[in-house]
Image 1 (cartoon, protein in one colour):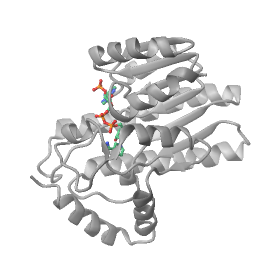
Image 2: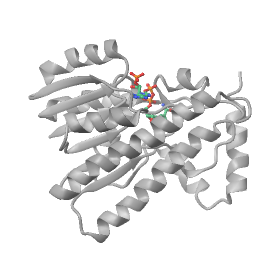
Image 3: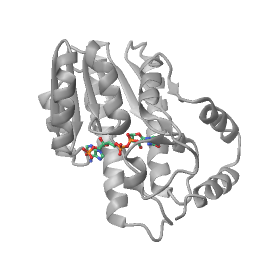
Length: 250
Ligand SMILES: NC(=O)c1ccc[n+]([C@@H]2O[C@H](COP(=O)([O-])OP(=O)(O)OC[C@H]3O[C@@H](n4cnc5c(N)ncnc54)[C@H](OP(=O)(O)O)[C@@H]3O)[C@@H](O)[C@H]2O)c1
């Protein structure tokens, strides 16, 4: 199996790479931090029956995504995982960071999904795992841009899943929707979690052993939260999320 993971240099993506290494005939690890990619490549190469390739690539730049696809076409499993958030009132957070988040969480994921899905549809084989978040199911006051980007990922995945079903395609798509996970996410987003975050390795293992599902929601409390949030009017969901996010201040 040929696997490409974005955001493989840290957190959930790195743990997924560790789980997949023994099963992959080619493992492509994408991120920006060359040092961390090289360290992971060195760690995983002896465990992988095929080649492990660390590739420095900023997926927020469209040309980089196009180039990545040109260099590594025809993957069997694309894990669209790279992403980050930012905490604070919308009027106060950095426009530059917001736009970079949109370019990474939305544009980069969208571009790679389209390019690789075309290959997969042509071959009638392959799987895409888009990493969204429980944040993809509700408005997210105090992390408004991040929640909106993850809402995009959920909606895009849901729509494409239906299109694939209509053409009776064997290509599969799944969307991973974790709650808080202990990774580099908190530091990048300038937050402390209101709840104790899940273990990244457990989340990675759970996700990869449930690829037959469309919505993959690790941990029972987050599955319950999703069920509770779904029927609520968005104004009420926003009120609840606002209270939870407020507890993260300071
Ligand atoms: N941790 C949580 O609580 C949580 C909950 C739900 C969903 N998620 C989602 O899970 C995914 C992984 O995040 P994480 O929690 O594992 O955080 P993390 O430890 O900070 O990892 C983020 C990864 O994304 C990569 N990345 C960020 N911007 C990039 C860019 N422009 N180009 C290429 N790679 C980029 C980073 O690599 P470089 O720094 O090397 O570029 C890093 O490998 C994200 O999509 C996040 O939204 C996280």
